[in-house]
Length: 450
Image 1 (tube, rainbow, N blue to C red):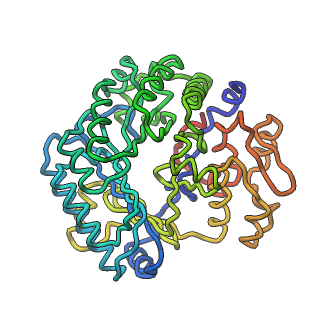
Image 2 (image 1 turned 135 degrees about the vertical axis):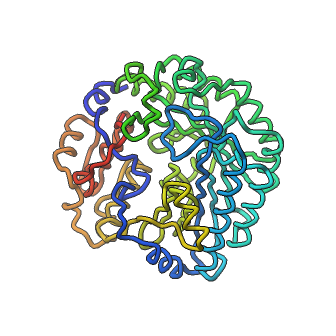
Image 3 (image 1 turned 90 degrees about the horizontal axis):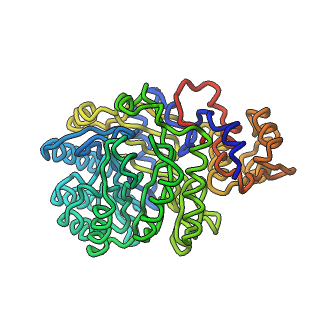
């Protein structure tokens, strides 16, 4: 373990690089009219993906960084789902053809707060408005504490074939500190229900760096997770940004682990999962060797998007819902964040696009470098530079950072390639930031590097 590096670089605030440029660089210069034009330019042979954001939960977890709100009633959720159906129709009508869809991802919030009937209606609308491929991946994020038997059955009936269950930690002290009580038995019951309903591919989401969390409690959480044998696990570092997410002020900052402790927690989780037979993928994902994500990593076709690592190679991403981000070949678009603003636009038969980003050639060049680094822990700078007609000597924006990382053994370079050392992969975001031409001008508050 390289706790010395965690101490040196761990306090840096850096993007997660699920896109490039990152969302703080989006602006109102991209409008609804631009999105309409971009949708109309999509060709029928292009594959696309869909992301739907459902910004509702039954209770608020204090560590949450998502755009979500708490409701105990079903009516606001049903009204919002009607807005999603309307937006899906609008997209389909604007394109003028049934676009081929390879991946659909329901994120939140908690998408399964919808009633089974509402969820089925929404999936039906997607299948009507788009050509959902027979082999398409339909994935849904789930809070195991609220998943009912009828909802699990509805997921199976609708063709959902991958789910992500929020676990975070099974340490009861940590759960109390983040207002998320969740027993192992609740989680095991949800897994059993899902598998019985025919939803065979299961992901677990874990978080390290939470209040009162220790390496020992992380190890105990992994041991419990392994009993349920999920296909994949995502292991994210908690981003404490109380100035941005006011409910995080309920967390005592003095109870948060420092960078070295966070590093030890993340590496303890990684080693335990590898010992249990999982393959480490990129920065923070793990999968069984025969999982599609592990195969994509092995074949060099791994991609990275707003949900993390994926084997989705679609040309476009259609974002549906409040705050949802879409990616067209021309650039990024984002919907209004507030649910009220989103619904006001959609019910007026308008798109809810409020900002975005028009990609330039330099952005495409740097996006490819950063994605390959984040996915492969190495990048062929010469090859990518030639493909984009760029001078490879100009690829590095922050030369002093790269020199420092080389001196500390984080990276090595030859004439064409840059390599991230195996024992320093947790710093790949620091490496990627040296190629980010926008970072120096950013006023955004990012998560810690470790």
